[in-house]
Length: 337
Image 1 (cartoon, rainbow, N blue to C red):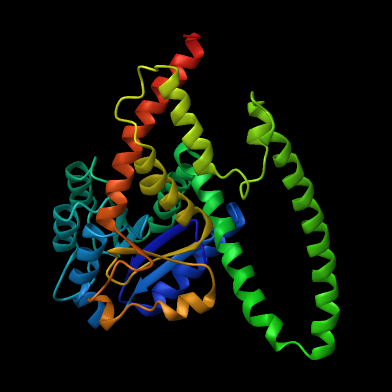
Image 2 (image 1 turned 180 degrees about the horizontal axis):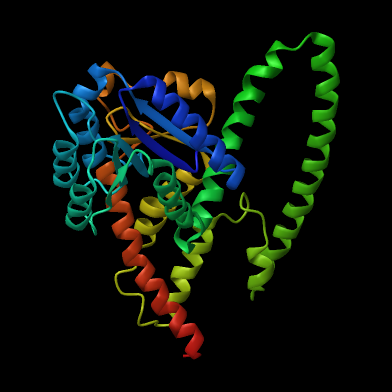
């Protein structure tokens, strides 16, 4: 499932954890109806081996938005140790430590020390109030301009994955009479689609006789006839013949193959993160998901059907460089030059 917020909760008193989780999820569901995922670390063995999880979170793709931690979590590792570990690992999730053993003067001193580091200290008595405050702070990010488009694309891509998987597996399980009835509906849909495609193809043929094109009509042609790559190719040629001063450093191959291709991959497929948090994995259907299980405990990876963290960062950097170029071109258009 695609969640709006992911929380890591480290607490070794299972009974308290379960009741606190139930209250928290009920509260936020009543408030916003958002989808919240909580991964709980509650057993002593898991608590004592937290270092591996911290390492993956700090060096790989980010999983968690908030971390809740019992300050007196273990005999082997305490809150002060974890704070140092989180800070040294540059983990940028908001972290709320809580304890019923903290004294007020100590708490105030710790709050001063970590005031601007995204690390918060709370008594267990005040945990619920502070947990909701931290939750509210994080969900505000969902309405930022940076996240709005990506969140909706992510959710609908997840739904596409379920739909495609069900089509692939569900149809074959139908009885013959059910397949026949559904096939009639499919044929009716196909006929309408084919008629539409023929009409679009005829419109495209009309363009072949033109010496001067209407760019609005050209861009309204369907993507299978005039794909996005072709549009960018014409855009690039137009920059050339117009002697635009902004063409310098613009590579059509770089932009379409290194940016647009990856954008379409992450925008239209189900996305997951490998166990070591080093790769983005993507799938169209459940069948692909099962076929692309990480090998050898997720150690011996290949780049097949995956995007490495390094590749992702490289793509973002390149996209930012092109954003500057497109902004300059927009300024050129707005100025009328």
